[in-house]
Length: 360
Image: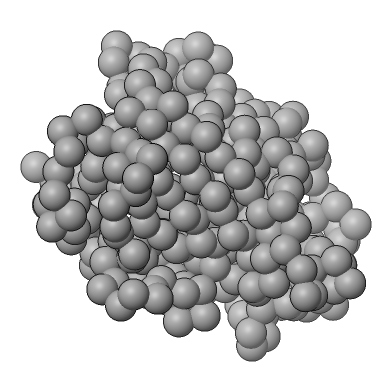
C-alpha cells in the first residue's frame, strides 16, 4: 500500500492519548495528522502536552495545532481517548459524519450494536458494524470499542478455556496506578497501601467479559452463559494489571490440557495479518512466582497476556494468575489492533493493504 491512512486522536494530551501517539509512530498503515483536545485547543501540541511516557513526543506531531473537540475532522480514522462524559455525544457524532471511531472510552461498550472487540477472541463480532450502520443510518461511519483494561487479561485467559465449559468465575484484580490516568492516585493513598476499591470496574468485569466471550448470532451478541464475580483493587505498581482467577470448568480437564489450550491458542486467522498483533497472544510461565508486572508486562511489546500459577482450587476447581499491560494491550494498543482488523475486513473505506489479498 502506497499511502497511509490519516488518523485523528481525541484526548491527545492525556495519558492514553499520548500512548496512542507513541504506538502510532512509524505505524505501517496509519499516520497521525490531527490532534484534538479540550483545554489545549489552539495550542501547538509540543507546548500543550505534559509528556508522561518515556522519551519525548514524536517529532511528527509536536508542531501540530490541537483542534477543539467540536472541530470538523478530515481523517477517516479516529482514535478516542476521551473521558466517558465527553465520549457519550462526540463519538456517535463523528461516526454519523462518516468517521471510523475506535474508542477506549467506556461510554458505548455495552450498546447492543457496538462491537466490543479483542480480535484474537471475537473477531467475528466486527459484523455488528453492518447492524450498527443499518440501525443508525450511518453509511461509512462506525463506532467500535475495546474493553476495560482489567477485563482484557481476564477474557484473554478465559477464551481458550471455553472448550471445557466455563460455568463460574471468581476474579480479584491488582490494578496498576496508571489505570487511574495521570496524575492518578495520590501518593499518600497508594504508597504502603492497597486500595480495595476501583470505582465501576467490578461491574465492567462482570458484564463486558460476557459480551466479548459471547456468540454473534443473526445480528446480535448472545452473552456467554457463565457467572462472573469480581473484586477490584488498586496496588502500588506503575503499569500492568494482574488478575487472580478461579474458574469452574464443566469437563474437568487436566492441568496439562489447560496449559496446552493456552499455548496453542491463536484465535481468528486474520489476526496474523495485523501489524500490532503479538506473534502469540498468550504465554504460560512455569516459574512458581510469575507473572509479575515489572518482569512480564512488556511481553510481545506489551500486547501479550502472560499467565502462570495454574493449580487446583478447592472451591471452583482451578486457579491461576494473568497479566497484561494496561495502557498498551488494555487501552491504546487494543484500539489500534481493532482498527487494523477493521482495515483487513473492509470496513475502512479506501483502505486496501496488500496483506488483505492473502485473506481466505
